[in-house]
Image (tube, rainbow, N blue to C red; front, top):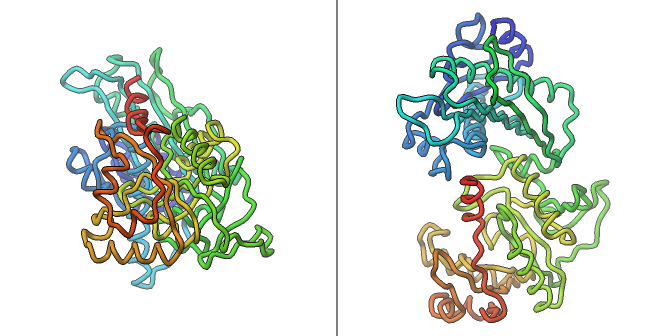
Length: 424
């Protein structure tokens, strides 16, 4: 990485915060050693220990060195950039320069043997585009110092690629794109080195759902096969993309199957099929870009889940919403039957307040919400109809149709699928 490369990146006028964990910190000193770095470099954060990473993200990630963790670090870094920009505006300093977050998660050569490979993940988060770059290094081919050098070069190479791609403006929304990444480095490649980059963007409406400061005037976007046919406003009305009114299904019953679908699997498809039969109506899927106890979903993750859903359940429409809790979903979809594994009765989702939980149940009744509940095993323990009837408030039980476990018992776990995918 040369001063010329850094100056080339600075021409983008991106103002960024970078968060680096595990390796690649030479990027920080390289960038700050060039004149005028303060015009674009807002802040550097190095949450190096696991506890520091947990504190920065606000939760413990499934893996500390992964593509997903790099994207989470980038998202938090951009959120920090937005905060710093807001403080500058309070002082009367304004700028139209894009705010960007860069996140790095790495596992490099150490003074002890590494079971896994040597790798660096770098993510770049703009307002509506997420780039995710992966560098796989030939194990034990370099010293730690040389791997650090290559990691720093890789970060700038990924940032340059992202800046050029955004500047050209040819990032098709709701599609994942992939390419090889050319490294700007003086180091010779080793036999098993490889560098790749993926990216995805959202359109304007989709970007509002995952914005750091939500100003969503639309609560949900209906998408199927990458196409948008209508949007649902906060008041429940629906419009076509041209602004024309679309007859709303507000007064009629509908079946909504909400979930993270991360990843979707055959059990999800079977639940949707059985629910449609049982309820006598088609099932629509819903993913919330915001979650109660999980990190927000970025553009690349949304795109990947939609692509996976298209393969598993190709005939079902998918709503993308910013409604993490059932009461918010019911506001979007009045008179809906939600296909569910019930957790809304847990007071922890209402600040550990029984009174607030009960108020939510009253509001759900007012909105005509009902539930088609499937039994499942969670950590080996069966959450059966009998157990739910004992544990749930009576007011909620009355609004539930419990599917007997003899009809279907869901013991598949998206968490276990992700864990097994990491180990394979």
